[in-house]
Image 1 (cartoon, one colour):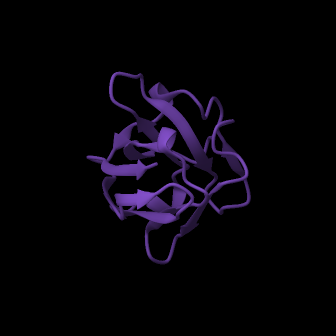
Image 2 (tube, rainbow, N blue to C red; image 1 turned 90 degrees about the vertical axis):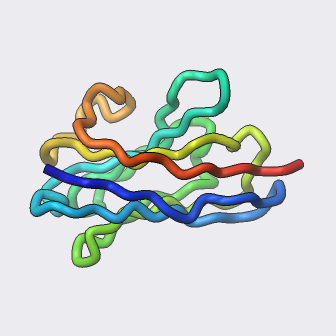
Length: 126
């Protein structure tokens, strides 16, 4: 079992940066692949980024590639999402998600993730 709590959201101007954190509790964090998703108002939830257990594999959605960076610190049970060059279209609730194990196939599919945080709101003003 993994419990996830996101933080770091807020209001930022276009072109600015934010770093989201996802604190995990539970003994399986260090053996769980992790991901970030987001959901904008009136839209479906969208894959943002995923990371393998040891951080050696990272994957990104096309809309954030080159601007966002996912990382993890297994000693701190935390996953991060560094967001640079933010755009108004990045405005959304951002969710942290955990897989049951190290497998990272179909990482874009939210159904592959078993545990979810409550989300943190990111608002980018133009």
